[in-house]
Image 1 (spheres, one colour):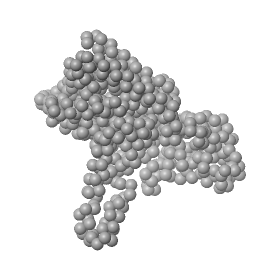
Image 2: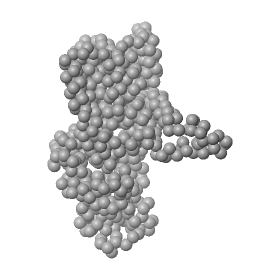
Image 3: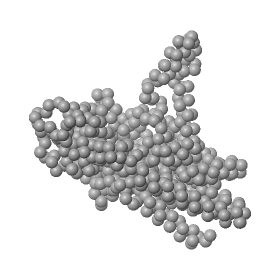
Image 4: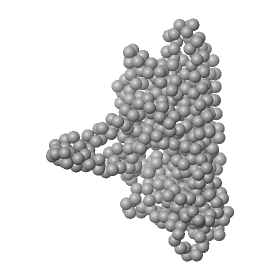
Length: 544
């Protein structure tokens, strides 16, 4: 294949991948999560005031992170959304657009890495084509999901390192550090692999690059030494939800069965519990069930639980690639396999109710390159056989893609809507015209972080939001991990907390809650219905 034709096909692949990622962002995925609204509103706040929603100056966010709801998000996504919010306004499309753009650019980024690892072959072009239509990557690219940024920045940083463009590589590694927590956790392991298999000669240029990396990484380190460490503690496997009661229960059972506590502690302690949980987590993320059949454990990130992250037809290509590269290892092969083995570590160290496709996003570039490598090995078939197999594989891929599109467009909205806080845009647009009739608007805390939806869709001027947030800042001192655990915080005349719709009121009050919080006989202005037909938001009122 000529270089001109190859470049033309690559451009076509990126164009198609861009269309898939950029079209109809408002409706797919269905719903809009509090995290998405927070990224968009913080971009809006930075644009207008130079500060985040809590009044922290933008330049300090690299060392403090976005406090947001108490989860301390990394700040990169909000900065990337500033231009789109400026030109398109504060809306869902402007908030999601940066990720769709970087998801499209990731096709080229992963192509570059594949081409560098396996030069002079068609693996790079195959990789780009597979990325363009990948269910995992398409799903993560269409919402304001910061985890997807790693699929652009990480492979590009590795590619530039392999090209000996060390300073540029360092800059992209550093940018990646401010994108997502998984990106931070995996970076030291990536550097270790690069040093083992692609050790550079120590030069003045390399020394300067390392110094720049250290200096630019310091704010990220400081962010974990401060309040941001609470986020790590909250999601870490080292801080289990049951507070180690499982270990205590096993010791109690041993005691009932006649084993003394002294010996029971040998078998049941924090180390053995962590070892077992981490190994199970790690292997689950490399399992065929996660990658090819069951897929993500939740629909919060636009994913489709019950659908594999890769197409099932790609499983034999992955297995063939593993066998081929292990039998004839090269430096590139060993490096790629090592990247695959280290990439589940961030997801492994997090406690989770199921497979977290967003936390495992660093795996994607390396696995898709492996699949493309396995697919490329079909060239070893005889020409006659290849003429039969190639159309068959193309046909099977078309079938897989068609079923994915049907699932994503017609079935996923029913799964995504409840998990992605469906209905706030419509609800606010409908009750805003009558809101001036009420002295108080009570919003139930049964909704997750509902204040950010009011701020986003109203929209509330950031200067007003910052004045209100000052009065919320003591929720940590009261022993709460997240803001919405606080009962009774205000944004203008909005009160967030327990709804208690049967309690008397002293002023005309608008009540916003879930339908099951109201009695069956209570009247209401309107309800918002999810795609399943189930009411998810109810607007009622009460007079003194």
